[in-house]
Image (cartoon, rainbow, N blue to C red; front, top):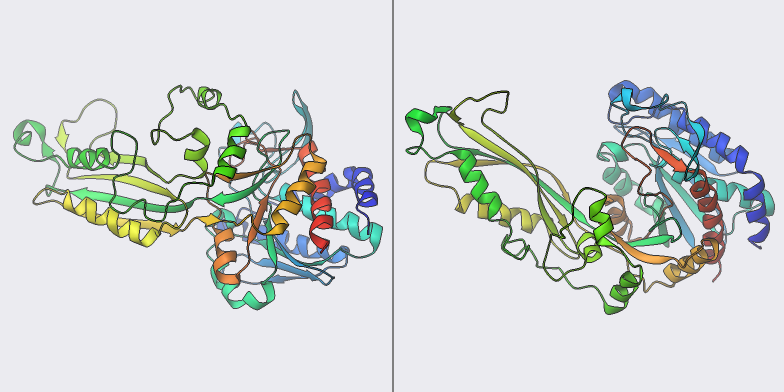
Length: 458
């Protein structure tokens, strides 16, 4: 089976493909808000019917939360598992949207045509690039080039509470030779990418309590220890003067990237000065002696995401607060153990407390990093297929973010993940006026057709 007629079909059917995407985008499948439960069900039903329309045996699978959609098609060669999510983020603040977020529109912009609306890039538009590639392949050849399982989740934007139980209960059905995940993006508008590293995450909220009540600073200041001062000392101690995290054992399991990968990243020509200038900064922070890309993609971090304590309203209230709190997150890489780091962090905080003070911890979840082995020949096949579609050669890259499903596929299914997406940094995902380039949707669909062709060949 040749991919060439499939590519021609994708080109000719682009208007119809965009109309189908609009239909899905009109469904307000906001998973975190119970008011939209029926809409999430509707989106799952829509996907089931759309898969069935191209001959895929699909069904909606109920969970304690929102349903999963699973579809199967038999074929020769390798077994591919394709993952995407149909749920979307809330749209607030609504007044910052130029149009109804669930009335998608095609717009002409200075950078080309875009489709605007909630879920266009994250993740309905990305999900549909693969479905449309399969539709075109089926239309031209009457069958798909290999065995494929379609797996669409409805809770990714609300913490995926049903995902691990579902994967555990259905592991035998979902196991595949490789998993394809479409929730990432391009390196830039000319360079497609396969993400091979995802950082893990550990989140802790700490509350430091000292005096039994807020104290008058004139009566107690100097004599009584201030919880904010204690918290500030703890936070300041989390990094040394060279930017390294000081939590004992923090770097256990962290290894340097291979020279070959470092050379490939250097060849991307990343301009950290322009990167920082876009957000009003100029000085590179982080670990001394590390490149910006290395720090973002392959090094662990410790960041303070929020601090509270004392009076924060208008004017002044001269008190020593009873409590102070902070939200602290760690991005993890390699084989770092979230549980071991969490214990070490808690021990460090407790050891720094003055007499009479206590601390409480509230963990908001943890997940280890995911590292995909590019020694698998499928990765190089996919990279070449992408390079045939885009202006510049595809790159293996890392990601500063966390996509836990990739790790779950590894640990629960024994399936390696390949993360390929066609979003752009300015797609405004999770923000008002989210958009997806029509070119990204079109070329992304063509890219999946090429990848299916490459991976199906032994």
